[in-house]
Image (tube, rainbow, N blue to C red; front, side, top):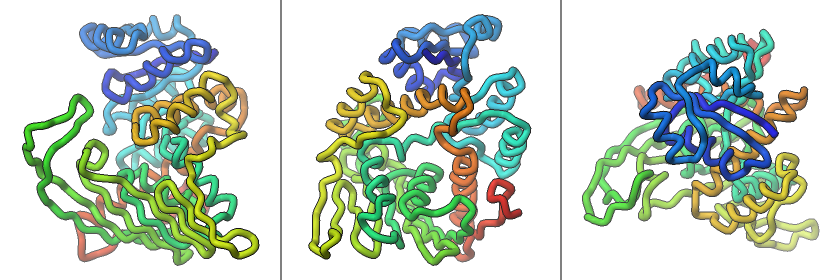
Length: 353
Protein backbone atom coordinates (compact mmCIF):
# COMPACT_ATOMS: atom_id res chain seq x y z
CA UNK A 1 0.00 0.00 0.00
CA UNK A 2 1.24 3.50 -0.92
CA UNK A 3 0.75 6.48 1.39
CA UNK A 4 0.71 10.07 0.19
CA UNK A 5 -0.16 13.52 1.42
CA UNK A 6 -2.10 15.89 -0.83
CA UNK A 7 -0.94 19.50 -0.57
CA UNK A 8 -3.88 21.59 -1.72
CA UNK A 9 -7.64 21.87 -1.42
CA UNK A 10 -8.95 22.65 -4.89
CA UNK A 11 -10.81 20.80 -7.62
CA UNK A 12 -7.78 18.82 -8.81
CA UNK A 13 -6.69 17.98 -5.27
CA UNK A 14 -10.03 16.24 -4.82
CA UNK A 15 -9.11 13.78 -7.60
CA UNK A 16 -6.27 12.39 -5.53
CA UNK A 17 -8.52 12.09 -2.50
CA UNK A 18 -11.29 10.31 -4.39
CA UNK A 19 -8.78 7.85 -5.84
CA UNK A 20 -7.54 6.90 -2.37
CA UNK A 21 -11.12 6.55 -1.16
CA UNK A 22 -12.04 4.33 -4.13
CA UNK A 23 -8.97 2.08 -3.75
CA UNK A 24 -8.25 1.60 -0.03
CA UNK A 25 -6.44 -1.63 -0.87
CA UNK A 26 -3.86 0.41 -2.83
CA UNK A 27 -3.61 3.86 -1.27
CA UNK A 28 -3.97 5.84 1.92
CA UNK A 29 -3.97 9.63 1.78
CA UNK A 30 -4.09 12.74 3.93
CA UNK A 31 -4.91 16.29 2.83
CA UNK A 32 -2.80 19.21 4.00
CA UNK A 33 -4.87 22.42 3.82
CA UNK A 34 -4.22 26.03 4.80
CA UNK A 35 -7.32 26.43 6.95
CA UNK A 36 -9.60 24.28 9.09
CA UNK A 37 -12.56 25.29 6.93
CA UNK A 38 -10.86 23.95 3.81
CA UNK A 39 -9.73 20.82 5.64
CA UNK A 40 -13.28 20.12 6.82
CA UNK A 41 -14.62 20.65 3.30
CA UNK A 42 -12.11 18.25 1.72
CA UNK A 43 -12.96 15.55 4.23
CA UNK A 44 -16.69 16.09 3.66
CA UNK A 45 -16.30 16.01 -0.12
CA UNK A 46 -13.93 13.05 -0.43
CA UNK A 47 -14.10 11.06 2.82
CA UNK A 48 -10.33 11.46 3.28
CA UNK A 49 -8.88 12.92 6.47
CA UNK A 50 -7.39 16.40 6.31
CA UNK A 51 -5.12 18.48 8.51
CA UNK A 52 -3.52 21.91 8.69
CA UNK A 53 -0.51 20.62 10.65
CA UNK A 54 2.68 19.56 8.86
CA UNK A 55 3.74 17.59 11.95
CA UNK A 56 0.68 15.40 11.46
CA UNK A 57 1.81 14.85 7.87
CA UNK A 58 5.19 13.62 9.12
CA UNK A 59 3.49 11.21 11.53
CA UNK A 60 1.45 9.89 8.59
CA UNK A 61 4.77 8.62 7.11
CA UNK A 62 3.95 9.34 3.45
CA UNK A 63 5.84 7.70 0.60
CA UNK A 64 5.49 10.89 -1.45
CA UNK A 65 3.72 14.25 -1.58
CA UNK A 66 1.17 15.24 -4.21
CA UNK A 67 1.45 18.95 -5.03
CA UNK A 68 -2.00 20.15 -6.10
CA UNK A 69 -1.80 23.89 -5.44
CA UNK A 70 -2.42 26.65 -8.01
CA UNK A 71 -0.21 26.61 -11.11
CA UNK A 72 1.87 29.61 -10.14
CA UNK A 73 3.04 27.93 -6.93
CA UNK A 74 3.45 24.28 -7.98
CA UNK A 75 7.22 24.53 -8.49
CA UNK A 76 7.76 26.40 -5.22
CA UNK A 77 5.65 23.96 -3.19
CA UNK A 78 7.32 20.99 -4.87
CA UNK A 79 10.75 22.27 -3.85
CA UNK A 80 9.59 22.77 -0.26
CA UNK A 81 8.55 19.12 0.02
CA UNK A 82 11.63 17.90 -1.81
CA UNK A 83 13.66 19.71 0.86
CA UNK A 84 11.68 17.77 3.47
CA UNK A 85 13.01 14.57 1.89
CA UNK A 86 9.98 13.38 -0.08
CA UNK A 87 9.50 12.43 -3.73
CA UNK A 88 6.79 14.63 -5.28
CA UNK A 89 3.98 14.21 -7.78
CA UNK A 90 3.04 17.62 -9.13
CA UNK A 91 -0.11 18.74 -10.82
CA UNK A 92 0.27 20.01 -14.38
CA UNK A 93 2.26 21.96 -15.39
CA UNK A 94 5.44 21.33 -13.41
CA UNK A 95 6.24 25.05 -13.76
CA UNK A 96 4.90 28.19 -15.44
CA UNK A 97 8.15 30.05 -16.14
CA UNK A 98 11.42 29.03 -17.75
CA UNK A 99 13.18 29.83 -14.46
CA UNK A 100 10.92 27.40 -12.60
CA UNK A 101 11.53 24.68 -15.20
CA UNK A 102 15.29 25.12 -14.98
CA UNK A 103 15.09 24.91 -11.19
CA UNK A 104 13.10 21.67 -11.35
CA UNK A 105 15.72 20.19 -13.67
CA UNK A 106 18.51 21.26 -11.34
CA UNK A 107 16.76 19.65 -8.36
CA UNK A 108 16.35 16.44 -10.34
CA UNK A 109 20.05 16.41 -11.19
CA UNK A 110 20.71 16.70 -7.45
CA UNK A 111 18.69 13.54 -6.88
CA UNK A 112 15.14 14.77 -6.32
CA UNK A 113 12.38 12.47 -7.54
CA UNK A 114 9.89 14.66 -9.42
CA UNK A 115 6.93 13.31 -11.36
CA UNK A 116 4.30 15.40 -13.14
CA UNK A 117 0.82 13.89 -13.22
CA UNK A 118 0.37 14.31 -16.98
CA UNK A 119 -2.52 11.94 -17.51
CA UNK A 120 -3.97 12.29 -21.01
CA UNK A 121 -1.84 9.62 -22.68
CA UNK A 122 -3.00 7.21 -19.95
CA UNK A 123 -6.71 7.74 -20.55
CA UNK A 124 -7.94 4.37 -21.87
CA UNK A 125 -9.36 5.69 -25.14
CA UNK A 126 -6.25 7.70 -26.02
CA UNK A 127 -3.96 4.96 -24.73
CA UNK A 128 -5.40 2.59 -27.34
CA UNK A 129 -4.79 5.06 -30.16
CA UNK A 130 -1.24 5.94 -29.12
CA UNK A 131 -0.41 2.26 -28.73
CA UNK A 132 -1.63 1.61 -32.28
CA UNK A 133 0.62 4.41 -33.58
CA UNK A 134 3.65 2.99 -31.76
CA UNK A 135 2.88 -0.43 -33.24
CA UNK A 136 3.04 1.08 -36.73
CA UNK A 137 -0.59 0.63 -37.76
CA UNK A 138 -0.65 3.98 -39.57
CA UNK A 139 2.97 3.83 -40.71
CA UNK A 140 5.24 6.80 -40.04
CA UNK A 141 3.14 9.64 -38.57
CA UNK A 142 3.67 13.01 -40.25
CA UNK A 143 1.04 15.38 -38.87
CA UNK A 144 -1.52 15.76 -36.11
CA UNK A 145 -4.62 17.90 -35.69
CA UNK A 146 -5.44 18.28 -32.01
CA UNK A 147 -8.54 19.97 -30.66
CA UNK A 148 -8.79 17.93 -27.49
CA UNK A 149 -6.66 19.42 -24.71
CA UNK A 150 -4.88 22.67 -24.03
CA UNK A 151 -1.25 23.81 -23.86
CA UNK A 152 0.96 21.34 -21.94
CA UNK A 153 -1.56 18.48 -22.23
CA UNK A 154 -1.69 19.01 -25.99
CA UNK A 155 2.12 19.11 -26.16
CA UNK A 156 2.35 15.68 -24.56
CA UNK A 157 -0.17 14.20 -27.00
CA UNK A 158 1.42 15.89 -30.03
CA UNK A 159 4.85 14.51 -29.19
CA UNK A 160 3.55 10.98 -28.55
CA UNK A 161 1.31 11.03 -31.63
CA UNK A 162 4.21 12.00 -33.89
CA UNK A 163 6.78 9.80 -32.09
CA UNK A 164 8.96 12.84 -31.38
CA UNK A 165 11.84 13.22 -28.97
CA UNK A 166 11.41 15.96 -26.31
CA UNK A 167 14.58 17.57 -27.61
CA UNK A 168 13.33 18.22 -31.15
CA UNK A 169 13.25 21.91 -31.99
CA UNK A 170 9.99 23.57 -32.99
CA UNK A 171 8.47 26.81 -34.23
CA UNK A 172 5.01 28.09 -33.24
CA UNK A 173 2.83 30.49 -35.19
CA UNK A 174 -0.42 31.30 -33.41
CA UNK A 175 -3.51 33.48 -33.35
CA UNK A 176 -6.41 34.06 -30.98
CA UNK A 177 -10.05 34.65 -31.88
CA UNK A 178 -12.86 35.87 -29.64
CA UNK A 179 -16.44 34.78 -30.29
CA UNK A 180 -19.62 34.00 -28.36
CA UNK A 181 -21.37 30.73 -27.56
CA UNK A 182 -24.11 29.49 -25.27
CA UNK A 183 -22.82 28.35 -21.89
CA UNK A 184 -24.05 24.77 -21.32
CA UNK A 185 -21.84 23.09 -18.69
CA UNK A 186 -19.24 23.67 -15.96
CA UNK A 187 -17.38 21.78 -13.25
CA UNK A 188 -20.17 22.57 -10.80
CA UNK A 189 -23.36 22.16 -12.84
CA UNK A 190 -25.05 22.38 -16.23
CA UNK A 191 -26.72 25.57 -17.52
CA UNK A 192 -30.11 25.64 -19.24
CA UNK A 193 -30.93 29.34 -19.45
CA UNK A 194 -29.34 29.95 -22.85
CA UNK A 195 -26.93 32.60 -21.57
CA UNK A 196 -24.02 33.35 -23.88
CA UNK A 197 -20.41 33.69 -22.81
CA UNK A 198 -17.27 34.94 -24.54
CA UNK A 199 -15.13 32.17 -26.01
CA UNK A 200 -11.39 32.56 -26.51
CA UNK A 201 -10.01 30.25 -29.21
CA UNK A 202 -6.29 29.64 -29.82
CA UNK A 203 -5.13 28.21 -33.14
CA UNK A 204 -1.48 27.41 -33.82
CA UNK A 205 0.74 25.78 -36.42
CA UNK A 206 3.66 23.96 -34.82
CA UNK A 207 6.46 22.82 -37.13
CA UNK A 208 9.22 20.53 -35.92
CA UNK A 209 12.83 20.17 -37.06
CA UNK A 210 12.01 16.79 -38.61
CA UNK A 211 9.42 18.37 -40.92
CA UNK A 212 6.48 16.92 -39.02
CA UNK A 213 3.81 19.41 -37.92
CA UNK A 214 0.83 19.88 -35.62
CA UNK A 215 -2.28 22.02 -35.89
CA UNK A 216 -3.39 23.06 -32.43
CA UNK A 217 -6.97 24.28 -32.03
CA UNK A 218 -8.60 24.78 -28.65
CA UNK A 219 -11.15 27.14 -27.14
CA UNK A 220 -12.02 28.06 -23.60
CA UNK A 221 -15.27 26.09 -23.31
CA UNK A 222 -14.22 22.83 -24.95
CA UNK A 223 -13.57 20.96 -21.71
CA UNK A 224 -17.07 21.67 -20.43
CA UNK A 225 -19.63 22.06 -23.18
CA UNK A 226 -22.51 20.06 -24.67
CA UNK A 227 -22.16 21.92 -27.98
CA UNK A 228 -18.41 21.67 -28.57
CA UNK A 229 -16.67 18.40 -29.47
CA UNK A 230 -13.01 17.40 -29.16
CA UNK A 231 -10.86 15.69 -31.77
CA UNK A 232 -7.52 14.04 -32.40
CA UNK A 233 -6.45 13.15 -35.93
CA UNK A 234 -3.01 11.72 -36.74
CA UNK A 235 -1.98 11.07 -40.35
CA UNK A 236 0.67 8.54 -41.28
CA UNK A 237 2.11 6.91 -44.38
CA UNK A 238 -0.21 3.86 -44.16
CA UNK A 239 -3.27 5.26 -42.45
CA UNK A 240 -4.88 7.70 -40.09
CA UNK A 241 -6.09 7.78 -36.52
CA UNK A 242 -9.31 9.78 -36.28
CA UNK A 243 -10.75 10.04 -32.78
CA UNK A 244 -11.90 6.48 -31.97
CA UNK A 245 -11.09 4.91 -35.34
CA UNK A 246 -8.03 3.89 -37.30
CA UNK A 247 -8.21 3.61 -41.08
CA UNK A 248 -5.17 1.77 -42.41
CA UNK A 249 -3.76 -0.87 -44.72
CA UNK A 250 -2.98 -4.33 -43.38
CA UNK A 251 0.13 -6.29 -44.31
CA UNK A 252 -1.45 -7.40 -47.59
CA UNK A 253 -2.43 -3.83 -48.50
CA UNK A 254 -6.13 -4.38 -47.76
CA UNK A 255 -7.92 -1.34 -46.24
CA UNK A 256 -9.03 -1.81 -42.64
CA UNK A 257 -11.17 0.25 -40.26
CA UNK A 258 -10.55 -0.44 -36.58
CA UNK A 259 -12.72 0.79 -33.71
CA UNK A 260 -10.24 1.56 -30.95
CA UNK A 261 -12.56 1.01 -28.01
CA UNK A 262 -13.65 -2.47 -29.09
CA UNK A 263 -10.81 -4.05 -27.11
CA UNK A 264 -9.38 -3.05 -23.76
CA UNK A 265 -5.58 -2.76 -23.96
CA UNK A 266 -3.73 -5.59 -22.25
CA UNK A 267 -0.32 -5.87 -20.66
CA UNK A 268 -0.20 -2.29 -19.43
CA UNK A 269 2.27 -2.48 -16.57
CA UNK A 270 0.56 -0.03 -14.20
CA UNK A 271 -2.73 -1.91 -14.14
CA UNK A 272 -1.70 -4.95 -12.16
CA UNK A 273 -4.60 -5.04 -9.71
CA UNK A 274 -8.15 -6.22 -10.28
CA UNK A 275 -9.54 -2.97 -8.89
CA UNK A 276 -7.81 -0.86 -11.52
CA UNK A 277 -8.54 -3.33 -14.30
CA UNK A 278 -12.21 -2.96 -13.42
CA UNK A 279 -11.81 0.83 -13.35
CA UNK A 280 -10.26 0.74 -16.79
CA UNK A 281 -13.22 -1.17 -18.17
CA UNK A 282 -15.55 1.35 -16.59
CA UNK A 283 -13.59 4.29 -18.01
CA UNK A 284 -13.64 2.77 -21.50
CA UNK A 285 -17.39 2.20 -21.29
CA UNK A 286 -17.77 5.81 -20.14
CA UNK A 287 -15.62 7.11 -22.98
CA UNK A 288 -17.39 10.46 -23.02
CA UNK A 289 -16.94 10.99 -19.28
CA UNK A 290 -13.68 12.84 -18.72
CA UNK A 291 -13.83 12.37 -14.96
CA UNK A 292 -13.87 8.58 -15.25
CA UNK A 293 -10.98 8.56 -17.71
CA UNK A 294 -8.98 11.17 -15.79
CA UNK A 295 -9.30 9.43 -12.45
CA UNK A 296 -8.26 6.12 -13.98
CA UNK A 297 -5.22 7.75 -15.60
CA UNK A 298 -4.14 9.59 -12.44
CA UNK A 299 -4.61 6.42 -10.36
CA UNK A 300 -2.26 4.55 -12.68
CA UNK A 301 0.40 7.26 -12.19
CA UNK A 302 0.08 7.01 -8.41
CA UNK A 303 0.35 3.23 -8.55
CA UNK A 304 3.50 3.46 -10.65
CA UNK A 305 5.08 5.74 -8.03
CA UNK A 306 5.75 2.67 -5.91
CA UNK A 307 7.96 1.19 -8.62
CA UNK A 308 9.69 4.53 -9.21
CA UNK A 309 10.48 5.04 -5.54
CA UNK A 310 11.89 1.51 -5.43
CA UNK A 311 14.32 2.37 -8.25
CA UNK A 312 12.24 1.79 -11.38
CA UNK A 313 11.29 4.09 -14.23
CA UNK A 314 9.27 7.26 -13.50
CA UNK A 315 5.55 7.21 -14.42
CA UNK A 316 6.20 10.28 -16.59
CA UNK A 317 9.78 11.33 -17.43
CA UNK A 318 10.65 14.77 -16.11
CA UNK A 319 12.21 15.88 -19.40
CA UNK A 320 8.84 15.32 -21.07
CA UNK A 321 6.97 17.24 -18.37
CA UNK A 322 9.44 20.12 -18.67
CA UNK A 323 9.06 20.13 -22.46
CA UNK A 324 5.25 20.17 -22.12
CA UNK A 325 5.45 23.24 -19.89
CA UNK A 326 8.06 24.85 -22.17
CA UNK A 327 5.74 24.38 -25.15
CA UNK A 328 2.98 26.19 -23.23
CA UNK A 329 5.37 29.10 -22.62
CA UNK A 330 6.30 29.33 -26.32
CA UNK A 331 2.64 29.05 -27.37
CA UNK A 332 1.72 31.99 -25.16
CA UNK A 333 4.68 33.91 -26.58
CA UNK A 334 3.45 33.26 -30.12
CA UNK A 335 -0.10 34.32 -29.23
CA UNK A 336 1.21 37.66 -27.98
CA UNK A 337 2.97 38.24 -31.34
CA UNK A 338 0.73 36.71 -34.03
CA UNK A 339 2.89 38.10 -36.85
CA UNK A 340 6.13 36.64 -35.53
CA UNK A 341 6.79 32.96 -34.75
CA UNK A 342 8.07 31.76 -31.39
CA UNK A 343 11.12 29.52 -31.80
CA UNK A 344 12.26 26.97 -29.24
CA UNK A 345 15.78 27.09 -27.87
CA UNK A 346 18.02 24.24 -26.65
CA UNK A 347 17.28 23.56 -22.98
CA UNK A 348 19.29 21.56 -20.44
CA UNK A 349 16.83 18.67 -20.38
CA UNK A 350 17.39 18.20 -24.12
CA UNK A 351 20.93 17.04 -23.45
CA UNK A 352 22.30 19.30 -26.19
CA UNK A 353 22.53 22.78 -24.64
